Every structure is written in C-alpha cells, then in structure tokens.
Image (cartoon, rainbow, N blue to C red):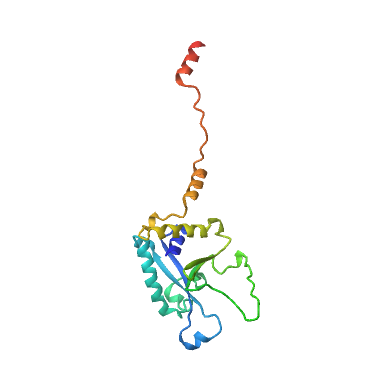
Amino acid sequence: AAHLVLLSRLTGQSRVTAGVPLANRFGRRRRNAVGYFVNTLPLSFELADFGSFAELATEVELRTLRLLRHQDFDLTAHAAEIFAGRRPAMLAVDNAFAYYKQALGFTLAGAAVEWVDVPRRYVKYPLSITVENADGTFRIVADVAHTIAASRPVDCYRTILGQVADRPDRTLDSITLLDRAGRRRVDALLNERRPVDPGPSLARTLAEVARR
C-alpha cells in the first residue's frame, strides 16, 4: 500500500498500477525444478476510492491473495483482447514490489559469494522495492533507475512508512513525501527570505523636504 502511495505522489496520478512478482510454481514438478518461473502481474488501484491508508492496505492484501490463483497467467499472450488497440510491447510493467518472509541470501557450499553492483541503467524496472522480513526486522531493498534517482524515492518511501506506522487510519491525501527537514528545505528554496531595508520613515522624509 505504501508503494502505491509512493507511485501516486511521484506520478501525480490517483490511478496507479504496481507489478507483483509471483513465484508461478504450481505443482510438485515446478516447485522442485531449477529455473526462473517468476511471473510479474499488474495490480491496479484508484486511490481516490479509499478514505484511509488502512482501507487501502486491507484491499491490497485481498487482491494480492486473489492474484495468486492466476500467477501463471500470460499477460502478453492476452494483451490484444485485454488492451484493445495497444501494442503488447507497450504493456511492460515499469515498477515492482515484492515481499519475502525471510531475508534473502545466496550460499554455495565450498565457494565464496561476492555481490556485484549493477549500474542503475541496467535495472529491470525504473523502480523496484523489495521488503525482507528477517526475524521481525524489515529490510528494504530498492532498485532505482538514474532517470528518477533525483526524486529520492527511497527517502520518500521511508517518510510515508513513518506517517502510516503512527496512524494507519490517516487519510491518503494527508500523506506527504517530505519530512519536516525536507519541508523546511523546500520552503527555503521557494520562499527565499532576505532582510528588507524599510528606508526612512514618512515623517523623516517630509521633514527633509521641508528643510530643503
């Protein structure tokens, strides 16, 4: 739900769509097979339909559970009938959110594992957020393309989470992307305050004219 609010604030749109990566491993054969079966499907929401963040979060959970029944659905193959008049190539999901019940790790017996940094221009989606639950400690991993890095989406995401954690019943329109320090910086940029010289008073000006 916080991811959807972030998308709405970054795009200025009330209708937003998030990509949800699904395991797509129905049956014993797929569960035990080695390979990549993940299928990312879209979830679309009109945020104007929800009065509070808590309502949105409840609906997100419900729709995600429903989506699990269709995790092998081939969106591209049915694009022509679902999105009449649009080219399938234009239907790629541009953001994704995934939640894991455990911390992600990669180990190989007898071998050392080294993480390799990937340049921003190579990330699969312009914005991808993964949350890992490591024994009650939540770790947020974000892949952000260079095209939107200036908007600081990770900082915005933390700010949104901080607001809704304190008040889940907060209305969506009251959720902001900036914390107090950020609002002060924006205020200073937009409303530059300089000392104003009031000049001589009217009485002093008139007295000077009279003397002349």
